[in-house]
Amino acid sequence: MKIAILGAVNVRHMTLISHYINNIDLNKHQVDLIYVDKYNINESIDDVNMYKFSLKINPGWSYLKKAIKYYKFKPFAEKIIKRNNYDLIIVWGSYTAHLFKNFLLKEYRGKYILNIRDYFYENHKYVYLRIKKLIDRSLFTTISSDGFKTFLPASEKLYLIHSMNSDVINDSKKNLEFTKSLPIKISFIGNNRFYEVHKKFMTLLKNDERFQLQYFGTGSNILKKFAEQQGINNVKFREGFHISETKDFLDQTDIINNIYGNNNIALDTALSIRLYYSIYLNKPILTSPNTYTSKKAHELGLGFDVDFSDSVHLDEALFNWYNKLNFPQIANRTEKEEVQINKNNELFYSLFRRVINDEVL
Image (cartoon, rainbow, N blue to C red):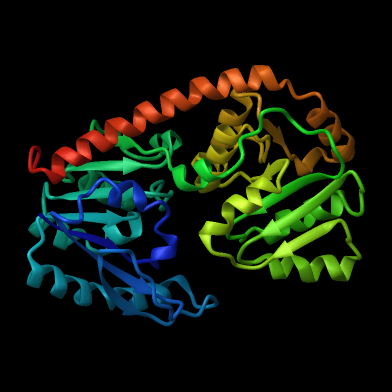
């Protein structure tokens, strides 16, 4: 089978593409990745053919100007798809699906898998009806959070993929008991875009020797500069890193920082990859209130909401919560959750392998 993975993003942003790649026998099937490169970098995946479309984007441009630039990717990708005559297309993200909507519905009806990673203006009727048609005419559609069902049209074609990174989880140390040593290391690991939220958090715990705040990943230098300006010393930073280093940062972590803010449907409905680190490694996690990630974390006894509207005694509340965590109870809950997560993912893997082996198409 000839398979194309189509994404209007860099490969680095195709979060956990391994859930697909690892279920394809690359010795038997051809896989091509057609994608946009806006960082001027070379990216590769072993035994996968790469078709890169270079694109220069200024973050300060208007949405319309950015959209016009991205539209240039369309003829580039369609030409490759027509030439190679793929049996199956995996469409990465809602934006990519909308960009190629007419082409997919006309040329690949029932022969594409739509992978939805985020909210994309589905509260607007026009966008909602477009995504409904794309889902209805897909072979099936995968979502990374059950929370997305609050804004997506109901469909029997929706399958949940739990986006945990098994390689990172398997390589990291699982908490057998919560350490009570000081300082308590609180780590944000990954691409940081919510600077104002974290500036507030850093300010609230400024120079509290009970806590060490750690920011590992792209965007950390912006927070480092803020800390220097404000005289915040109980902090540690590391700018962008290779994914293979994730385990090292997790091993240096007592509490995972997953604060993004809320009152935004995209943030409120997503299920964070960091929650899976929390579940599989038995590490407590900081969340934003009234979000789907917060709901799941609290069900497992792992979560602490950082509420900036009521943060006068955040330091004491956080310290007391951490020291009162009931590890045996949490471990019992996370073990059961792991079983359910693995069961859901295996349902998708089984269906996908049947597709690859021509049992479904």
